[in-house]
Length: 146
Image (cartoon, rainbow, N blue to C red; front, side, top):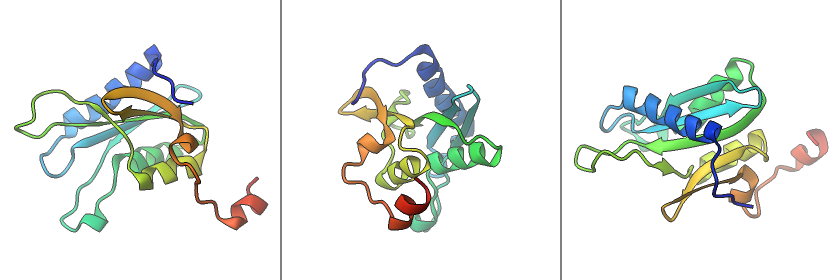
């Protein structure tokens, strides 16, 4: 069930996502930042990569998750993403919701990862699987991974 109260650690994770996108922002190239925290407290962050051909673009969430997993962190606990404003959009860097593909990826990694997301202008958090009613599950996953 969605929760509305972020912990200090959650707020720090959002700030890390803001930091990474602020430091690496390039208009039209990198405007979404994501940060993940492991159950042991390690934090990994990344920005998205926009390509000239949209299908080649890569969201910030899989880059942050891949960085963590590549470093041996397989105990992802929480993920948060933010969007840097464009030149004419002000200064606020709000929390954003992961796209549908990223929701699938996050919940495939672990259905219980907490996702900090925006819902109608309100920052909430919930389990990844709760963002995907009727989630697609391959049949081999049921027999081999559970």
